[in-house]
Image 1 (cartoon, rainbow, N blue to C red):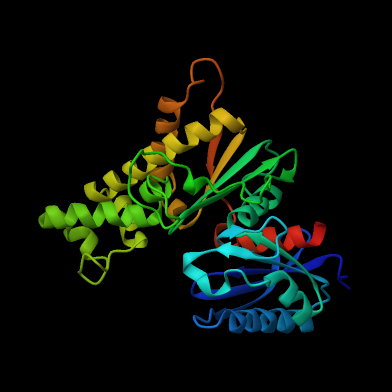
Image 2: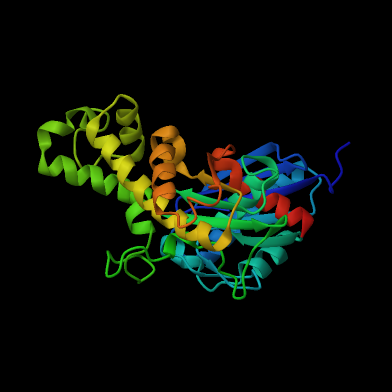
Length: 319
């Protein structure tokens, strides 16, 4: 029989969905549940999360639950301070309210840190030190593992790589600053580059438009990735552009952190080498140590969209 010490629950709170999974000590999800994320009162979201936890814990012996959520976290890991996509949870004592509602020990963590820990323990980052994770999706997040420990930082915000400024006076970011890496190298940036290119030269956009609903506004990341695999010039140029910016950002991180391995996750990495190749090239060109030191290994994540659930469940079990 599996004991409660072998299992824990991981919850991933997104802007549209709540995903929950029971995870064993090997990082395998053995049961899961999904619900829509309420868009109104934040405490209704807490109730939905608690319902997922109760359903899963009724079927499996667990005593801990980890909760992964995007946004800037309080250092004590009890609140998510800011997140424009789930603003109804801002400032709510998520940790305490969930712990009271479920009767289980709760660990609350940033989604980038959760994914980083999952990849470090069970995925592409296993055995590396230090390991930097960069998640490239709608926005950009990340996490850093040093000496087998997740770096939280003095004020709880370590790993927010998407909000490092890479362009003085650049585009305004959702965080309120200008020139953040997220504005130039995220999934949103990828779509913006492609939509802009097609609007300026519509005749070149037929292949990408055909993969969606035929409109420029309907172009999604999956359409761009599929077109790039077929050699579409606009799609390839867009991946080259975000790869260039990611390499610039990674060169700065590498100069400070000296990671052995950089793991690239998030939905945009579905493009594989189409994105990794320009990242590596840009990293090499912008690294100040390129002539005297080895470059960090840059690899694709292995756990896909389960990294956050697996990682935060493990953090809950060992914390």
